[in-house]
Length: 377
Image 1 (cartoon, rainbow, N blue to C red):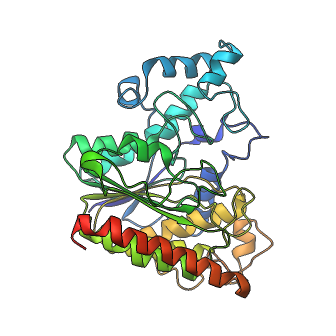
Image 2: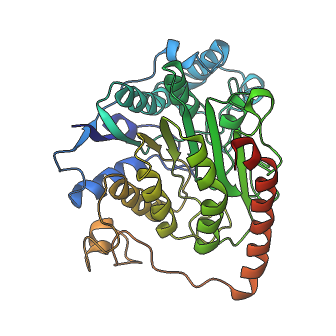
């Protein structure tokens, strides 16, 4: 029986990003506590797997050796400030912290381990909530991302001749992953994100569709400020889903950043975790192996609840009704909402809905004209 595996190491709870950094290293551990307390890790078809650090040979498949040396030196206090800044290190979003390469290699190693378990036939689903570092470049850190575990995992699959679909639901555009595969057709990248006009990293516009052999295999669905559940799901259904079916991948990599949720301090969408659950459920129904990762999410209780819900959906649980009616606040340590894992329905600004709908319709129409014909749609 192929397992659903949850990738986690207690070592991820020690060290990591400093407390003043918005990227909270406690989220994977808190997610694990939640799913364990709810019995979502105890069934025979599920297992917790402790990953190993990605070794240097694995990391250098994408990252420059000199950059890895810089990370190692920085983590031990042996790097000049100017040298660090040239590599994106020592900034508010990519701070230097002790033993950083060791910590980052473990988080990246978890995604690589998930890919290898899928290739070995051991796992049908693998979830690494400590992964999702989609901004990292070969020799440059940005946006809380130093090592690009998504690219490293995708390279595991492509080396085994698997066609990869990367579906990124994080609110920020996956610039590092897109650039890595921009001229390739064995990895299709589809990203739903807040428009680069209003959010870091300022990329991911609908015109960015790939080059050469990769033309039509980079798909960007930029979303306006205030995008709400129905509009988001409509964009997915009309633009992403037909392309996913036409591409017919061998495996799906799924980034589940929860920073698109309403109330996230670093973004401007108005989503609930219900829309993520609906999309993940549809992805699972494709019948392909899925490697899922975490990503952004800076309202920590909302992110933890969202990832716990995503794990349930990945495992085929019926999450349409509350699993712990009346006890959610106690078990999730969140006094704002006692309804279990799913968010309450949000009322959106009726005056803003028309503008959101119009902008998304234009994006979908643009993709229908430029990318759909490449895939016979």
